[in-house]
Structures are given as C-alpha cells and as structure tokens.
Length: 463
Image (cartoon, rainbow, N blue to C red; front, side, top):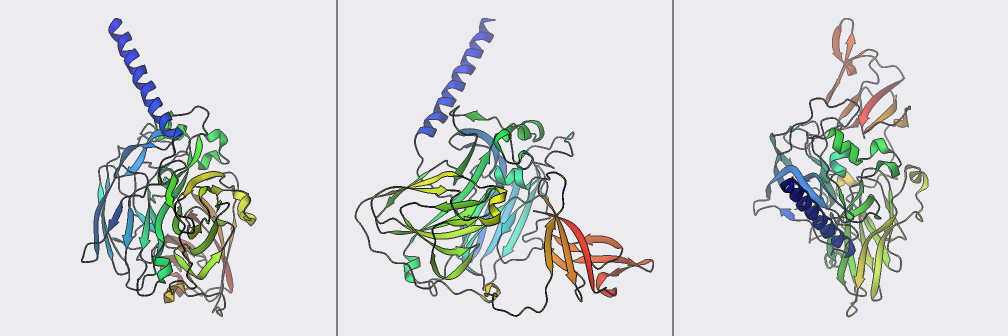
C-alpha cells in the first residue's frame, strides 16, 4: 500500500542518515576523552550507583548495542585514597535471559556482578565477592574498604559472573580504579605530570577473522543467545570489523602536549584475549609501574607489553612538535606470549606543539607497602608448582590446572575462588574457605588426614 511504501522509505532514509552520522564520526579522530570520575566525600566514603543496562556504543568503525555502566563505555573512573571506602549499589536493568538458552552458549549473559581487579581488599561479601549473582531486575550493595596501608596504583573493575565474563567485559562493563599518590611520599616530578587514564579494549564483531571464534564475541553470539540484539551498524564497509578502542573511542587524539613534556598514561588492558606491545615511535617512554605496583625508579623501555587484565603506568615525552602514534606492534619481544596472539595497529595519536617545556623524570618512585615487597632475593619457606595443561578444544573462560603439592601442605589456594583438595583421597566437596574429605564414613577437614609426601590434584578454575 502507499502508506506501507512511505513507511519503508522513511525507515530507509532514517537508516541512511544514521549510517552517515556514524561514518562521519569515523572520518574525524575524536579527542582523547577521560571517563567520568567518582571520588570520595569528605568522610572518605565513595557513594555511587552503577546501573547495568543496554546502551548504544558509537565506537567509530561501528555503532552497536551493548551492556554499559550508567550508559557509558567505559564506566566511571574511581579515584580513591588509601583508607577510603567504596559503597556501590549495582543495579541490573537488563532484560531476562532466554529460557531456551543452550549450554554451549554464553551462560546467563544478563546476570552480572562487580569485581575490583587488583585492589588489596577482602573477597568476602558485602565486599569484592566474585560469587555474587545479580540477576535482571535485581540490585546488590557492595562495601569495599581499602586499608590505610593500601599502595597507590592503577587497578580496574569489571563484571565477573563466570560463563559470561568475557562477553560482558569485552562489551564494555569495565572501568578504571586509581588509588592516588600520597603527596607526602611521591616525588614532585611525578606529581607535576599530566595524569591520564586509558582503558584499552579490542572489539571483536567478526568471528571469521578472530584467532579463536569461541572465545570472541561475534554478532551471532549476541543475536542468537543474548536476549538483546547487538544491532550492528557499520559506518564504513571497508573498515575492519575488529578494532581497538581507548576510553570507548577508536584511535582518539591526545592534543595540547608541549615538546619536552612528560605525560603520565595509566593504561588498563581491558581486552579479552590478545597481548599488546605498545610503543610511541619518535618519543621517549619510561615504565613507572606494573599492575598497580611501582618500580624502584623509572625504567626506559622501547616497548611496554601487557596481557589482558594487566595495567601499565608509563611516562611519554616527545621532544619535537609533530604528530606521533601510540601503536600496538608485533616488533616487541613478547617471548612465549606471542603464541597467544597480539593486537596490531594505531591505538591513539599524540599531537605535540607550542612552546617547549623542560621537565624531568623522578630518580625514585613512591615506596611500596610491606605486602608489595620485592621477594626476588628472599629465601622461600617452601614451594609448589602449577603446570598448565589440559586439552581437547576451546573452552570459554576455563583452564585446566594441574597442581603438584609438596608436604606438609594440606590445602593449596589457587586464587580467591578455588581451593584444591589435592591431599584428600576422596574429596567430598569443594568450597571457598573449606576443603572437606570423606574419611571412615564421616566428613573431616583435609588437614586432619595424614598427607602423603606428595599429591596431585586437578581443578577447573575461571580464567
């Protein structure tokens, strides 16, 4: 009918206009924006709400629906001080999961929770409890207390429901956490630097080009198993369907850098798989911290390498005016890590111009607390080995770990989520904080059993 035909024409015109707007955003580099900042009140308490809901991510080469905190990708940056308390209400406004969902697909893609990755805090509820499950329409209150001795450094937060962690994290449920430097102990050269957060992600929308389609998030996974259409609209048909973003934007530009200025980049590798080797050709780069732990002094490096989930603090200085690029390259010495794949391409640009300034690097960096002591020269009291193995195909978010334990240990803690009953001849159950065994017809703690000289156990643990 004429009415139906007119409606179709209007729909097509609207789609063309939308694609044109997306394509226009592809042609011009976005300025490097900083995520919204959440910090503590005068009483040292952070009070905020993170609402998980469907939102459109205009990432540059593509615009698509995803899951986001408060409508933003990435979520806000928490800037904290040692001794602060985080009071976070996590609200799940996602729709219900598909009741007919296949066991071979992502498990419960719309169930979520909150994990602070790297903080030296309690894993028990109502704190950083990775076992919490916040279903659609539900909410949970977290209270996470930083000790007064907490080291300054860069960490991050993300969704951590096992079975859908990869899907939700790669989709944008991430954010940075900065524990600020103490002005009384930080060198003035460090405090004088411009301080920028870079949350780096690799977006995978095309499984045909992914090294491991099962571990990636192609459109089909969203369209067939997510209860929420990905609704991808590509701004440029020639653009790669897999690309890198910084703070939610593709290849943004850091403007206003003066020749000779040292700029601090706090980088979070919030991607889902490949390693990264980053450098800035033509500029000096010094490594300041790894995974939220300061080095003794800045270290000149040609590349900085890091895996998904890790963090790197670097200082970058370009001596002359010009346009420089922060690149992910395969030229870095990745060692065995290169076997797992690397990201390549321009990550961001740096525009350097104006009058030159004179800045210097500090000769030392802030002291580390006792729990971050350098143990390389320490004499160990004992040892155990963890050998990675397993086999047969690809599995989402799961590794098979082979643990060899030397006596007299009775229980080995692999991480906050797994206790291995390696010395239990007949394991009854495994759970956080316990490892119970069946002995003489009753249950007993593993420590009560006489352990053999060595024992071996296997446990499945989330990656």
